Structure formats: C-alpha cells, structure tokens
Amino acid sequence: MTKLGARSLAAFAALSLGAATAQAQSRTWNVCGGNAFNTCASVALTVTGQNVQVRIWNLSGFNGTFANTVFTGVGFEGIGNNVDVLSSPTPTMSGPVRPGDTPAIWQLRNDKQIGGGVNLDIVSTTPNGIKNGIASGCNTGLPTGNHEYWMTPCTLPTANPAQWITINFTISGSWDVANTYLLVKGQGGPNGASTECITGGSHQNCSDIPNNVVPEPVTIVLLGSGLMGMGGLGFLRRRKKDEIV
Image (cartoon, rainbow, N blue to C red; front, side, top):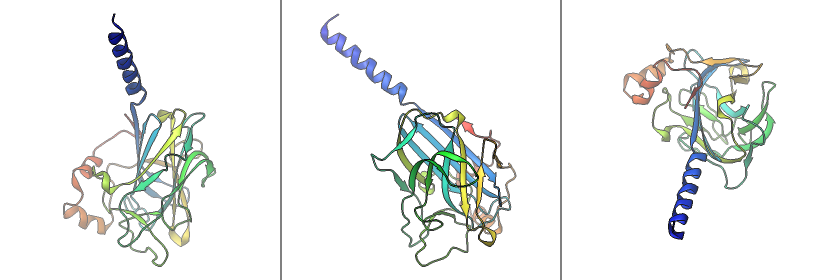
C-alpha cells in the first residue's frame, strides 16, 4: 500500500469515527401535571456529541390548565456522570417574544435545585424570577413595565423551529439521553403560586398529554383559522410517552 493510500484510509477512518460519535440522540416530552397546579409543556432535547439543543413550548391554557403560567426554569436529571455545562462557546437562546420585548438569555448551571425537592444535573433558569420567563401566547395577564417575556404561540407545537424557544449549549462528558427525566418550573399561577412538572424519579407528577387535549376558547379561534399548521396536527396523533430517537 502506498503512503498516500494509507493516509487516505486513515483520514477516512477518522472521519467515520467522528461521524459515529456525533450521532444525534433526541427525546421529546409532551406532558401535563404539577405539584401545586397543573401546567402543560412540550420540551425537545437533542444531543449531538458535546452539543445540546433544548426546545421549549409553553402549553399553559391547554387541557384546562392555567393559561397565565410562565416557565422560569427547565432542568434535567439522570443524564449520567461527569456531564457539565461548558461556558465556552457561550450558550445561546432564541425564539419568539412578546411584541416589543427583549428578554434576557437564561442562565445555565450544574447540580442545582430549582424546586420540587429535586437536585438536578443541569438547569436553565431566568436570571431574575418570573421576568424573562417563557409565557404562552394564551396568556392575557402578563405584567408590563420591566418584565420582558419569551412567548410561544397559543397553538399546539408546530414543525417550524422559529416558533419554539431554543437554547443551545455545549457539555463535557457523555449525556445519557435514554435515562434523562425533565423538570419544568412554572410561576405566576393562581394566587401567585409556583409549580414543578416532574417526569421521573420519586417525585414524578407529570404524565403524557392526553390525545383529546382541549384548548381554551382563544385557542379554538386560532385552530379554526388554520394557524395550527401540520406540525400541530401531528401532535394530536397518538404517540409514545418520552419518545426516543
């Protein structure tokens, strides 16, 4: 074998190995529940090597839940040992906002509790409570002033990534997607209460969204106008809990 041939094969092997280690793992939670009051959320997790993407949709107002709930934290537990958020490259956050608002990027931390009595491996939270939280477009009671909000549409989730709130960051170690469970913290509930929707462990209180999820009247108007889209229609079909790809 010539030196050129050997080098070419070595380069091909390296590329193949890199492609294998960077294969994407994904998991989606479509859940309702909570420890103080019920809320609904859709969260899609994708891990590709050391790159992590979390997409969030606030479904408060669906299935009889409190529409004015604002998400202020999302965390993950059971992700495996020696997995930490890295500060470089800088994490990013993007997505739709309440008209006129410029909300701040959420903070990412390791080994932190944000409620529900669960110490989480990785959390992403607002820098200052309910301000800069993720609201539902069904929410009609958001305060103004120095409150700035991310806001997902008042529909079921669509296939359009621009309509989701998306957080991107990098990690050390190897994330165990299959055994991960989720915590979503909601604030601004009835009488100012907060709630935690937890999908696993001994504190589990959130379960798969029923197939006959019922929107509030404002949402019915949106669905009737055709704004739900094909992605939302697909969401209504029967699907497995905690789908893993």
